[in-house]
Amino acid sequence: MDITTNSTDMTGRNSTNTSHCPFAEGWDWLHTMQPGYILAISVLGILGNVFVLLVFCLHKKACTVAEIYLSNLAAADLLLVSCLPFWAVNVANGFNWPFGPLLCRLINVGIKMNAYCSIYFLVLVSVDRYVALVHTMSHGRMRRPSYAKLGCLLVWGFGLLLGTPTMLFRAVKWFPDFEVTACFLDYPSPKMELVFNVTLIVFGFAIPVSVISYCTCQIIQALKNQAMERFNTEHTERKATLLVLSVLLAFLLCWVPFHLVTALDVLLRAADISGCNLSNSLDICNQVFTYLAFFNSVLNPVLYVIVGKNFRKKVMEVFEQLSMRKKMATGSQRSQLSSTLKTLA
Image (cartoon, rainbow, N blue to C red; front, side, top):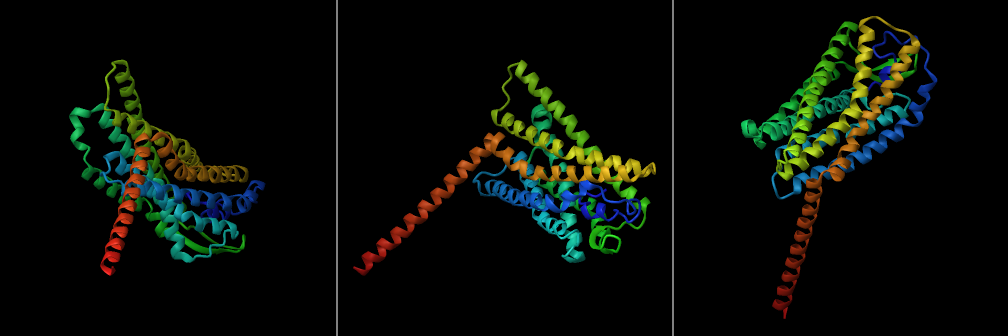
């Protein structure tokens, strides 16, 4: 199952198992509620994530390791919400894809990259917090901005690699049974589809969530031990850790249901278990959980402001910087005007 399976589900995914199934009544909401919901997420997500990136970029101090990871997470979220308006038009258009085959591939690769880059940026930031709180003395030298930037570059490359099947097999095709020209995943065979889906579940969900879960448990235990021993961790480290934990929790709440439904769908296909009621139920669950996952891209900037005390401090300092520059520019203009008037006199 693909992350953007609206038209795929509506057109029988790979033109195999579900094409003979009638639509469930639950699909009526696709044409009414989804376009407005997607556009709302797009607008709020673009404003929020652009704001976050501007704060990190304009602040006079260099970003910390955790902030490098969080800024890249914001960039991944921005990529997603910038692609979603195309899909909103597609849904509102009755799943007739009006943008051509190239954008069919590029837009869906962008959405796919968000899913997998986001989770690996959270792996990096959870490992960073783990090292900062659990192995401060022994591995502290690993927490360098240069290493963080290299790690982010590798994550973007890995996300693009995981999006390769989408680039190769996304196609625009006419479906006479549904009278739509849909943008969908056209795998050469069901076996290849199963292989790619299992690969993505393992590398895009099981492994990173296992790492995140382990690091999170260790971080929480370290914080408890430090509280019991009245050992004062550096205040900025504790505040950064609370922000990271809240972002991790939000990500898991938004994305785990989608990945579980995807895994269940793959298992049922592998076991050759089918049925119209089961297929329609899975498809509707996939739609609901897909848009819950998309909401995470709007939620992250809100968490930065509500939970991130350091981030709020950065926001105030950026506004002060901009205000100071404006005053200096105004004072310079007045000085130039005054000297010009004296020369004329």
